[in-house]
Length: 271
Image (tube, rainbow, N blue to C red; front, side, top):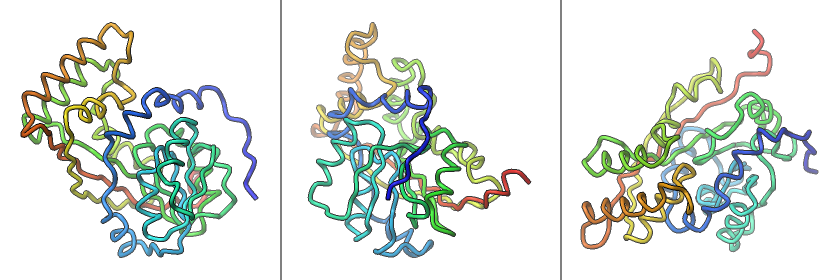
């Protein structure tokens, strides 16, 4: 039986709709996740093929898929209807996935139902205090949490610097993208005094001109059609691609950042 959560405020729901108009670009051009994540979690944290995984903020199903390929049953929890429907379509051939209309702060999952909770490109949208309470409720004793981002270094190459500069120029809320979110200083408070293990895996991706444009437009921070900067940004994307493309493609040197930890018991917060 699924848990019936208390109603959450409009403030909490707001960020969850940011990708509604970007789903098609997200599907086309966002990178997947390396299969080595499964090996890492298996060898270091005891992931078994029968372990129940809760993918929180499951989006279009990219992270859930690597666990489903491992045989794991997966709850995909996603508050945005358009993203959730895209995930259901992407994962339609897998039979051990359950798609749920919920959010990190109120998943509706049964109590102590998950051995692992994972979040790909989504933890930075969560309200941490309420999420911590909810994760304690749905995790089994000694269950693990893995927070995961695909990151693009800003200074590794001229391309990376130019790419970051495009976002700084046309995205007024830009703070460094996933590199900013995948920062231990932003993650430590969630786990409190508990130790966190950090890992990085290479995850490069190659995009043609159309998909490169979609990758940029899939960001929640980029201007949408009708915005005064939209046309200028479109021209800047073309210039950036033409400057750095090789044989009609650009390789994005993604790294997958992984942070794994456990929550302290509920009394530690008040110690």
